[in-house]
Image (cartoon, rainbow, N blue to C red; front, top):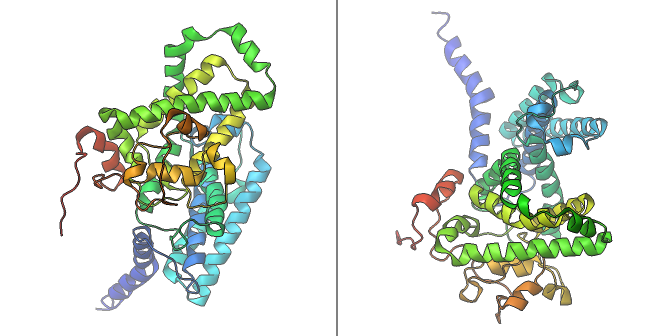
Length: 401
């Protein structure tokens, strides 16, 4: 008899302390729209995001041979990473604890604070890193953390300062799907690079000429970089154009074009097979010509920035530069479903290629009116989009009204 009242009380405690925070966090992750300031939602989302990234960072410290990217781990300053991790733990913990005390977005803040506690209990910023094997299979968890954190800090700020669509929410519709694309593309970076390198060496190795590569590598840095970007963009242009004009290839590329809202995360939506094929097609001529390591590193920075920036919700006065280099304004037209924009603006770096080949958009309108694939036939969800090329229909959806 004495245990009877305790059982409902225990259930209430579990519901309030565990189930309710988890359920509210789950609901937040399925929601879209603007976060209203003054209710603790913004700070709790920041605390939750930082807490989650901190936990992933601690795991990367525990298992660096499996969770970090070899090319990056040799360039890290471990002390700096520890300081950044400690700062993120303090910020996340401080924000979430303050919200709990003040009763603002308490459920979300409890989850964020729990993540900080777990990360700290697992060693926090003091996890020792000893010697470990260097040639092991790996998941690019470190690249995911750094790129997500860096992209968010840089591009969200740029989008808020110079927006094309001023009322667009950070958490717009289908952001969850594109975040999954972002994560998976980063996690499989090791597998993708392995496949790309294998194909490059076995398909194009016979074309390599050492004497010609030596000539290329002794070209001054700036002109060599400009030529490297041009070679890559020519390969990108014709590969990209083939994805639009060959029906079988379009089924894969349609995944990327199904984004209906343009922002910094939109470019992440991509079929994994297209990702590999495009990288092989673009990197093959660079591999054959043998550009220097410094130029290749600079090219990777350029392509990484433009791939995100050109999809961003950004508008700037570019002037004559818009005819030379690809800008967000230029690439937004490529993603538009307006009639005059179909199969136009293929270039990734140099806009003049489209003017040269006659595929630049010609419109009296300043900006596109609609984005996405014509007919809106692409299903939402990462798995559905990866399976779409094999069984989906490119016919317009029937109206359900």
